[in-house]
Length: 394
Ligand SMILES: [Zn+2]
Image 1: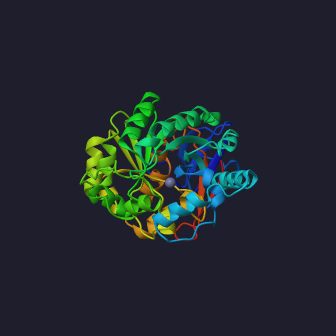
Image 2: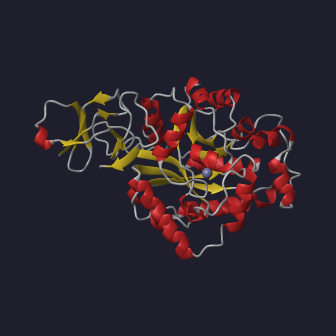
């Protein structure tokens, strides 16, 4: 039995406990969260800071870790995508595997216990099969036109079959983004994912021109298809924003997580509420700063009682893989969001999204969520400040 005491304990399932003590059994499962005082100080491990459950990174691309420091910052999404496509196959297998290994280690050290991770192919699977983290792998597909739809779907099915299941890891198939998939591919993926009880993740409204494409078939995506010489005659603008245009193709899968949401409007949030049984909204603010230097309107999602989660995106578009660093950006830009909510986004909401909340996300008896210590917080204001750091202590 371990007894871990913090200045505050955030169980997430209930109100924060001042001078709380987390009791863990020998298997590191939570027994209870208690007030201090009833324990002999000699048997308590005391920490200065906040104790909370392990973090859930709801959006990452572990397989792109080798692109760290390879892509220029703040050039916009079109240039970013072009560079990723251009350099994706320029690195040796050894360089890629070493980068994946060190990225995973970085996540573990930063108190991450589970990851919603995108895989377009199998290159991260050796590492995932080590079982160091619990993964939900989103096997991502895109077709860019009807001539590629069946091939994309068949490739996705082959990757799906190979997803490692160590450490209770799971998988589902998912479409990449509104601008890169045809309605037929949505139809196939939706049916496949609903049959296997999974969830769908879509890169959503990361750039203002995504709406422009669906409203009037203009903007950077229309330009990029022309640059790449793709026949885009199949694409019909809907006259609506990209979110309703895309999600109306998802008819069977109950749970959808929208990634980025930088240009999502209140109407889009309302539309998702009315049409998606379980809509989640994932923020990866450092990636938004890295690529577009723009951030979502976080308070708007709070006002709409949206279910928010936090992701790091990949090292192609981030300086590190740390959920805490993402929270710092959100807090700096929306200081009115309470710490309670921020930590819920980073823990229990992510666990619910990935269907890992039986075991992870809160300090409830019987769960084995991992314990993080957040140091250097301002405990009077409950703000992270820039110097806050996380240590995994269980
Ligand atoms: Zn992404």
